[in-house]
Length: 78
Image 1 (tube, rainbow, N blue to C red):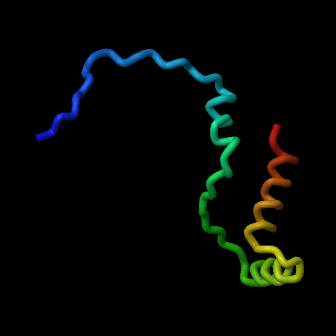
Image 2: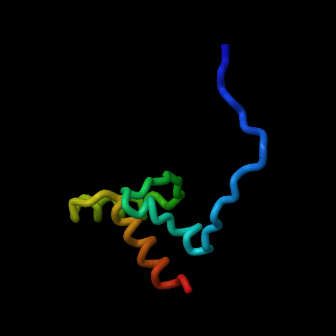
């Protein structure tokens, strides 16, 4: 027998968040940020150069790409 109670009445009003709060989750700021995976198509020669550079610097390609993307965004966001 299912004894779950359903509340079909009006919901409680929730406090609205500001625009900045909607994009910057203050609760998540204390936790490590989750990762998202995406695919990138690049020429074989660029991929090889990136892989070799990562090897020389003892870093991952992900670290180099993420650093490059963040640098680009910081320079171009208004």
